[in-house]
Image 1 (spheres, rainbow, N blue to C red):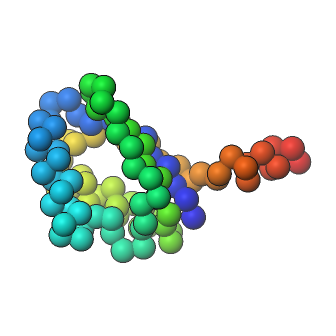
Image 2: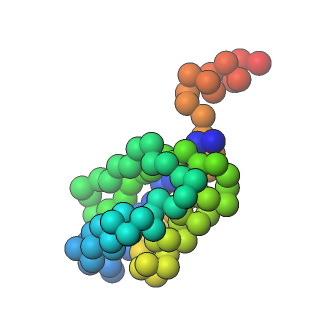
Length: 98
């Protein structure tokens, strides 16, 4: 199942510290968590920094744990984090025509 998240980093957090946390989470294997595969992960160069990520996940619980890995590693990292299941557009269009 695919999930897409939109996130905004807290501008009060030093981007270098966020980068260190990201590197440590990846290096330690704490993120992504078991059952989650990163399909795409993008970040903008604008401030406050924001981006999107698409996950392939076995279940909703894995997606929740994936977010908690970030929140536990750096409380307050996000000012906004929205996530929902998604479909590729080529699969959504036929559904819209039903």
